[in-house]
Image (cartoon, rainbow, N blue to C red):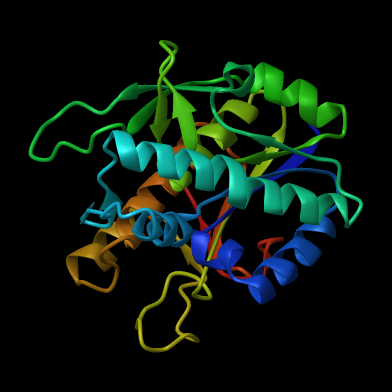
Length: 257
């Protein structure tokens, strides 16, 4: 029987505000057993870029990452945000280790090809080092993963944090019984975006198609759920989309096959 690991993904807004970060770290520290945290940090990157006179460009919610922007996101994601989380967890007795995909070659990506949009230095994940991550985790080290990968040729690539969480969970499924928890500002997938209590408690692919067709599920929730179904199909035992106050994934929306 495989040991359990909980992979928690949290959005930038949660880790960038002092009060919500403190609550997150308190809650994450209480998760029993093995665990991994994947974080964003986009608002901080936008703020620091503006201070440096670098304009942030977004297309469909995705950051265009030119050479100057890449420097900013590397500093912010891999430095400021990641190390703030690591230090906070160390203060709570969690032996955390901050990682980008370049560290130990843990996540390798390919630069996204130019199609309708040139996203610049953005990576599409090709390989996750599940073996080396497993070794760290079994040594009671808690990986804290920034949304940065590398291409094996010396280039850092900005990479979507939801994708990193999903691909990491899939790679770890060979070694552990994996629970993947996507935490964000809402209580889960909602029937009515204006009603935080209208949580869809569970969802399967057929129900997902029906909700999308009726415009109940739309926008950024669509790729989040697609990542979730992909993870379940690849052997992840459980996927939950829930609130940042529910890092154990007890409530929220449970994704089913």
